[in-house]
Length: 275
Image (cartoon, rainbow, N blue to C red):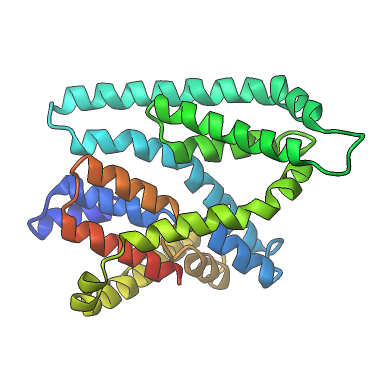
């Protein structure tokens, strides 16, 4: 974020736009990286463990980035922006605290209640699990924390219960359906005409992002005393742009932090880096 903000200022751009681009690029794809690590049986390797820990921290930091966006796009002054960010952080902490309490009390009881021991089918449990996730996501959106953050938080809550594996098995049949909706939504946002006219800029941007992210992450890893091989593997694993970047991009566009062409370029760049 600091590098992007400084670069934007030196190039005559808006510092706030540069800071957002840095926040946007800093997020890596947990889903893509975990699948890659599992396919290569690298989950328990040193670089795999460091990568997974970093990805989890990035996902948790998305809430802070959401709170930062209104400050970058605010026109009411720095003081009002800081006050808004503070309010958002207080709401975020309170929301997570309530979910933490529910994860130890009501949620396990509710999930066990939905299990039908006399039936081999689990449609009721499946519907109840999805409804609970949608309810928490809706509450998160009403609090101004976004649907995506609430969905992620409720997933963490369910993972702390004894029925986490059972819930995962029940939602497995419909997971691909929701993933298809997500990817179809991203596909409908892509402008083919813009892609055709700016394919050279897009390719250069994606290559530049991959090189810079790999270099920065590997340098930080090396600073913590890891070997060259581990540092390079972690850097390459975190080089792409994650799915949470789409959410940040949509929120930044609504707050008018970025312009239309930059929005399309970042959208296409995120999709290309995941490929």
